[in-house]
Image 1 (tube, rainbow, N blue to C red):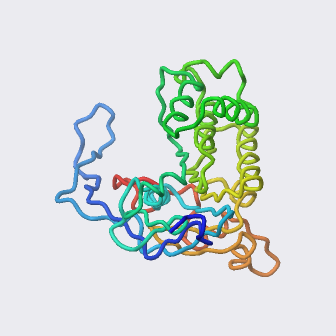
Image 2: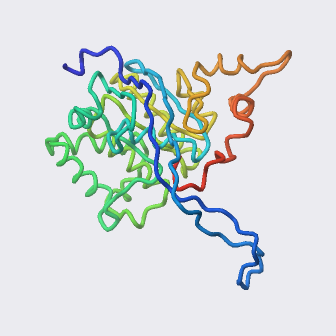
Image 3: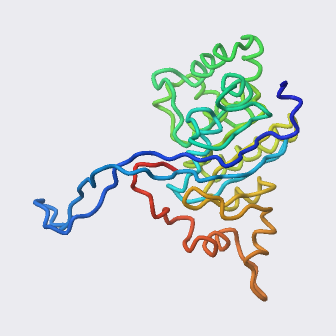
Length: 295
């Protein structure tokens, strides 16, 4: 099947993933420590299986910006990795433009790109050298690369004097801008953004958000976004899912989610929605956090 024939950018049916982990627990015996905490950490044994993603069902339309909200440890990043073919689901089915992430993972990788909160680079190389390396992996014509990278850097307002500095000398915010630029080089059909603006100052954050809106409008790119930023989610996303303990507990437009929990004379925020559906705020971790699983 040609992925261009599919009217759905993403389809998840019963997607599940669990990990075998050891959990940390506090022992009440006095700790032999100069810090005088009175408690110390020990490993529980044997290991146990912990569900990171549990029977998740949803679809994303072509050209949609779809958001996923949830605290650290709730399964957001695990779900992104499943879609990106970096992890294999234990159960269920995931298709990207009709392509199965297990049976056709190489084809899936050709139509997606991903930005994570902790992007990896060759730290001794410059931003331009890192992107040049990525362009060769994508099989880009180098003349096209030079034009594309300049346009992307300009739109992200990455100062030209920083293009040739080693990545290790750039600020966290500038490194994240380079990560976004690298993902956009391949003009992906599906862009997976895992907390892409974490660590950015308000101006840089808005510039990244504007670029996401531009590529969706100009190229019809589908975007799957995880974030902790309520304003970002409301500004960018046509629909939002709230994940709690690996499960989607709600999925709708931002306006409808707020209507769902509104009381007489009240105008709830998205953070209010999350608190009322899960019993805690977005800054509080999922109860299973600390089990070795990520977001």
